Length: 390
Image 1 (cartoon, rainbow, N blue to C red):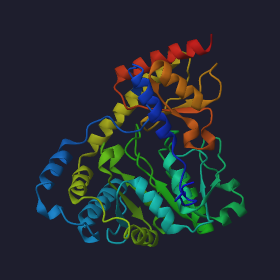
Image 2 (image 1 turned 60 degrees about the vertical axis):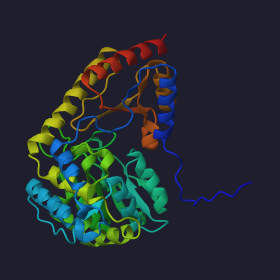
Image 3 (image 1 turned 180 degrees about the vertical axis):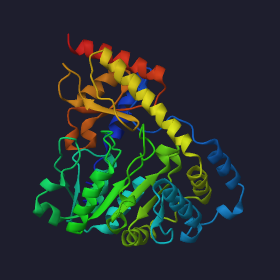
Image 4 (image 1 turned 30 degrees about the vertical axis):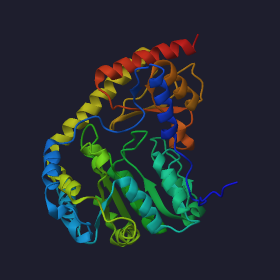
């Protein structure tokens, strides 16, 4: 038998690979697949950003390795953006770092701030890459108890659990649940982290997808810079998912550790893509607010149409997703439900178990199709539900 050259920390293949095979098979069988399984925005990137990339591609100054000094214009723009948004100044040289997407940043930040055998306080439902990042870092999840509003209740965290952990990992607005958190919640979180000596990692790629008002930032609150690192992405706010660009802001010690871990791994993103990011961060806020209203409209329309076929889902306050339990009469096996749905009707959803143990019996819709396609998807789902209830 050939040897397996695998570390014990290699994650299992994710559910998105499984779903991708289902979609390929459905298309091969002649289905018109409506893919609502992956949260990759279908909206166009800002034209100004694309023009900047085009110009940068003809600039020889962008062709070489991009060390820290060359990332400073992006980091300065990121800190200026945060100052405009939250009126909190940050030092771009010590409290900011360029990322090759926030997903990369989270994986390396866990490696930089934990040791194998440590634990992380988090929810039992989370973006799928979190679980792989935990395994690579060799750390274990400890699940947070929830209060009636669906947010973590830090008063109910056992002292032994807090003592075993190095990090609190949160994500609001949340993927997949779309739950939002306010300043009051993050004030409690900061106090908890300070009391127990924990780092708060707040993954914040959906900061611009609240339907009204402004998303809260723990880093912007008193004491936030002492215990918090926030991760931001250009994928959701500016529809640049494939360009892999993000940035980390926050606690200088954690940022320095993250930089040290990244330095032997990558030389940062291509400078032309960083210039795209600078352009995006300087766009008027009205641009991202208009995009948020597109997600709002799509969510409202799909919730309404699914309700018409007997599947009642809650209307979210943010985000590009719907999240809910399987419809009546369709059992509790989310994996089987999603496989059968794409095979018979060509509608691809994400099974909830891919988001963690709390996701069993749930599914996630990504609102990444125009309204007419979402209405078509709802009609097909209605046929599928009716067939299951015969």
